[in-house]
Image 1 (cartoon, rainbow, N blue to C red):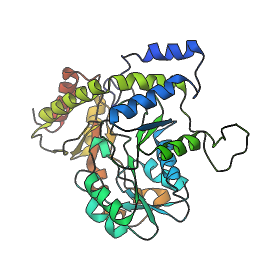
Image 2: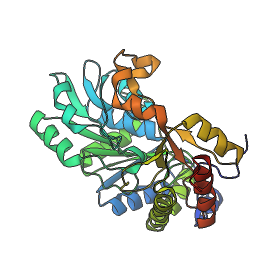
Image 3: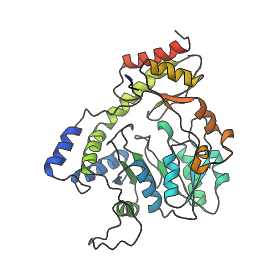
Length: 352
């Protein structure tokens, strides 16, 4: 189905085409092109972090982060129940085991439930800033300090939430706050971790490229063309975040007091505007008939076939997954667009 109001659309009205054209014209289109380093430095500087290591996706960033921290077979990593499955997959890719913790009412990991899941095998915590809501990182870092654990922040949906863990991992997929079409980046203040991340993403080549590879590594490199797009996006990140704050405020106003709609807690940065909706599937059909695309909430990790646990029907993560959805959220939305979307929601619930 073609939607007149898609759930996401990249904003490519900065210097993206100029930079990509420059990369192509100069012949530096691989991961060795200068735009990769320029993007890494710009994004790290914006976040107040010393080092950025770009890679091929957000999932790759999480995998690299765990590997750089020495996570592997026999280890456990605490992961939220309410997240995109890539968070758990990254742990599995390393040979470690994800251990899931339910969410609170803000959809983020319930930090009060983490400690009971920590065992002698636990090596890291992976908080996820879901839909742009910052986790309670003070509590997460206190637990990490108490139990000598590492912290990998899954910031795939949270460009603008400043990192505090050992490594923060961002996605640059086309629907994210800033994008390169595909891609990811790890941020860290630790120079040794940064070096290891870069080593692992590039097949663990030795400095003399002798083709002797002493460890299992990956081809997770970002191309210069992707980095050119990403750099142009970083240059406009403040502008993009400001536009998204306005989008959030307009949705809040337009959906306030609509019977059948529960507004979610405010977001530190807006990735997607999420709501809970009675008769959700009927609402989605009503909106789709009017050209408005919606997407469902994540399902609990314990409901995923690869991690199936019979506990899943009792989880908060399941309760939210049953009636949650998000509405079109991108910087191209005008006030008129949002009035059309909220009007359609109000019409469905008889709210005028």
